Structures are given as structure tokens and as C-alpha cells.
Image (cartoon, rainbow, N blue to C red):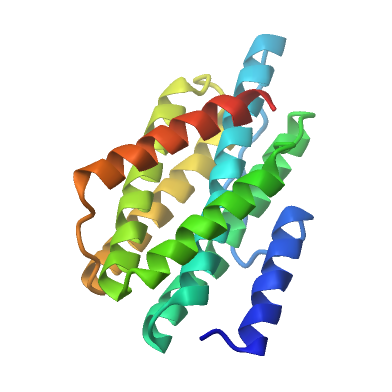
Length: 208
């Protein structure tokens, strides 16, 4: 059962994530890339894409925290928390890019966080193999999602492209690590359910 320290840490992460207190360790991949000129339509479209990607990272934080909260052993818990810690960089990079585009993060972030935490907690209760398998499938779907966004970005927007490319590389690595740690393939109905939930999230987050 989770102890008081886990409860405090989990609550602290939720507050920091939802209030934009991310912190980061790695340099922003866009730091050395000159900002390109975008039309108003291009700016709005890129902002929508980056907002969706930011929501994806909000969900990832909540999923990892939920999975760590109910993980069956310390090794799996450490794996989840380590991945969550590294992906705070993604939150920071997406938020700064949204600021540059004079846009905002999703107004529904608290909803995304709570829902994703519940799903992650359920995955943790299912056992370590399924818990890690959920990470693998989540990261694979995020990888495909980032690929789509990289194709949709205006060709001249090197700043957004650098951020998403680094995020994609990180997601691939996290999926591989979870797989090698013993992740089990999820049943197809669960994979399809995850894709449907992702579609709802991306549609709403692009606009709100």
C-alpha cells in the first residue's frame, strides 16, 4: 500500500504539473534555432499542435504517477518515476513554445490529469508486466502521434520541429526500456480503447 511519503510526492507532482512548475535538466532543443516567420493561420495551427503535445505530456505525467502509486514493487515504481522526471523537460519545452506563439495550454488540463492518473493507477494494480506493457503501448502511440505532427508542421518552423523530434526520441527510448524491463503486449481491445481516448483528447486539446 502507498505510504504517506508517496501520497505527499504524488500530490506535489500533480500541483506542480498543473500549475506549470516543471523544472528541467536538459537544454531546450530549440535554443539555437532562429524563429521563422509564420502566417497567422500557421501560427494558430502550430499552437494547436503544441498544445496537444503539451496535453500529451500532462497525461504522461499523470499516467506514470498513477502507475508508480500502485506499482507492486520498488523497481517498477522507480522506473515509472524516473521516466516521469525526465519527461518534465517535454512539458517545459512545449510550454515555452506556446508562449512564443502567444498561445495557451489546454484549459482542460485538470481533467486530463485526473483521468490519466486513474488509468495509470488501474494499470499498476494489474501487475508489473501489464503495468510496464501499458508504458510500452502508450509510448508507441505517442511516437506515432508525434510523427504526424512533425509532418504537419510548416517546413520553416525549425524550433517546433527540434522540440518534437527530441520528444520522439525520448518516447522511443522509454518504450524500449519498459519492454526490456518485462512489459507484456496489451490485448488489442485495450490498444484500440487507448487510441479512441487519445483521439478525443487531441481533438479537444487542439482548440481548448
